[in-house]
View 1 (cartoon, rainbow, N blue to C red):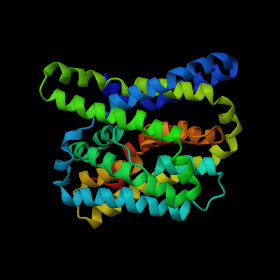
View 2 (cartoon, one colour):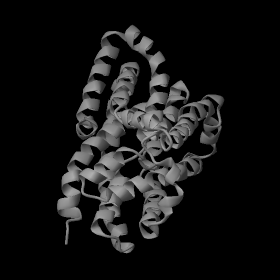
View 3 (spheres, rainbow, N blue to C red):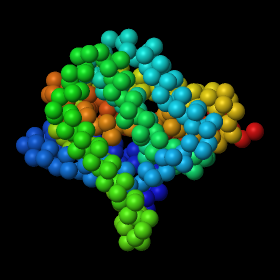
View 4 (cartoon, rainbow, N blue to C red):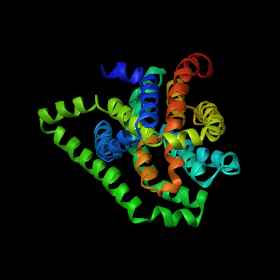
Length: 318
């Protein structure tokens, strides 16, 4: 059941975005009432997602040094450099630019494993990499935002609302997931519970997207021209990520399956883990949320194409 949901999740999200926009346009009052559910759903979503990441295996993820070195170089050096050269100079409003950077600067730690498996990469490497990717991005993100958006963003980032959102919706679920994983090693009932929690991320994310679409309908329609601009950024990023995976795979002399894993890691971004940060921004930054949700949809649809192209054309078996 979980595999089927993850396989068809892009169409599910597209359906829920459409339903949310329709509700927001027809019944703004009902959409406003649903907003109260957003934060609890987001907290549960992140907790359920974090429980699927082997957080206790961070030390073990360093064993495959060449693969991990390539993964770190690509995600935390090459991609930020690419964004600095291309995206930062485009005539985008600060809110739209913040959305693009928030979502593209940090690598995915969940469905990247699914796409690696479906795209004939090394799933074991992907699982081993996820806790390290999560740890490094939490440290690197504030530095990136300061470098890209300047000291003005630092004041926004250090606001009480954003710090509370980060602590309540990222640090707290992360700590609870770590405790859950620790308990699962000792109690079979907890281990079964973690298995069932793995069924929740896709439907919960669909509900979160539904509520965001319903509550941000006016912003979405007002940003139609901007979304046309950023869609080319996101498509171009996917192509760059795939080629970067191939290039670093050759540079670090990795097996074909490992190079495919790199390509899917570079192409998938941590959009909904960054959502609490975007949602806690002042109302003038509402476009940030819309851009991030839009990117996740473009990414998922793009992954459908990459699942065919990467193993058959870009990185075929020798």
